[in-house]
Amino acid sequence: MSEELKACPFCGSEAEHSTNKSTIFVEQTWAWCPNKDCVLRDTEDNDFLYMHSDVWNTRPIEDGLRSQLDAMREHYHQMSHQLAASQAEVERLKGIIRGVEGESYNWHGIEFRECCNTIVGKEHDESCSFYQWEGGAQ
Image 1 (tube, rainbow, N blue to C red):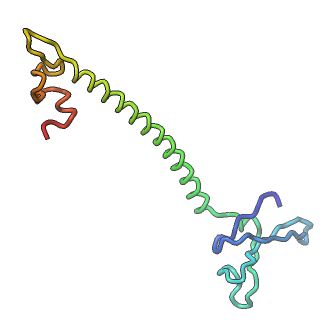
Image 2 (cartoon, rainbow, N blue to C red):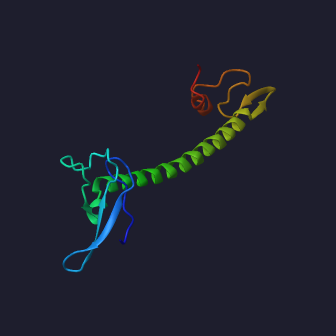
Image 3 (spheres, rainbow, N blue to C red):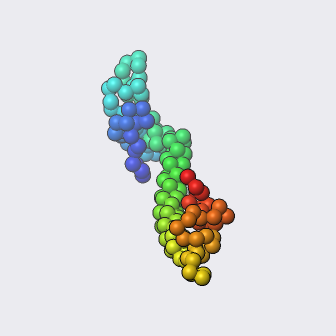
């Protein structure tokens, strides 16, 4: 047998197999589920249902879903890294904004904020980008 047999698609039990030669001397591998409670058993005489190993391992829907799941996991992994990088960038920009918000200058003895030219100790002007970034007056 060239490849490993997949578990039973109905109960998950490990498949059993046997190899024999057909009348034309071609080696064939047959698979079945050994679980006596599995729905895959022949209901008339409670015997195993044998399948050629190629048929046993053919699971197009399952294989397609596994492929989609792998793609989604990879996308999630990439998005997680992008999210972490974006969160770090947001924190870096918040630090810059806080630094700018704290800067001021003195004009004739009155201290003004550089971000919106309002007097320090008063609320920011509504047109101030820092005011808008903080969500305005709450």
